[in-house]
Image (cartoon, rainbow, N blue to C red):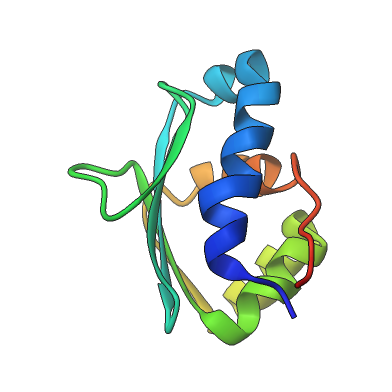
Length: 112
């Protein structure tokens, strides 16, 4: 099973740091609300992933903790499946959600 906290507190920040130019080119701030796990902000402008809500996110993505592992297995395709099944909601700039899938695709989740 995926350790969600470790993924967003350690794995994703390291992947963002290793892909700074690609991340900066996205130029957006995402807030990820995972019911049952927490809230994280992914700041592509400053290349950071931090715990807690963003003051003014460009795009907020809400989903259940039970679906985060599915999303991470194949961010692009599974994001669409989760969205159209109603298990993932996107608030704000929905077009940016495609870029969010690119960000998640930078790191393969580790299970613990």
